[in-house]
Amino acid sequence: MSVDLVTIPEEADAGNIEAMLSCLNPVWAQVNPHRAWQVHAECDRENCVTKSVAWNTLVEQGKVVPDSGRVR
Image (cartoon, rainbow, N blue to C red; front, side, top):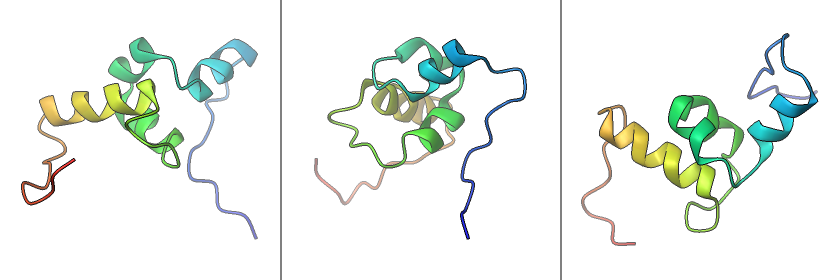
């Protein structure tokens, strides 16, 4: 049994999918932060530009509140 964590839009072509999977796509991450966070769930924020930008965008939008007890 497989679990589909992220559904790829029907209208997506190979270029769109490549952009979604790239760890170097800050523009897409800023426009689609929630989807970027899902697609890059396995990535480390320090090593993935896409996930880092998605995180910062979600924080700015007030959709994620960083844990103040953690130090990075």
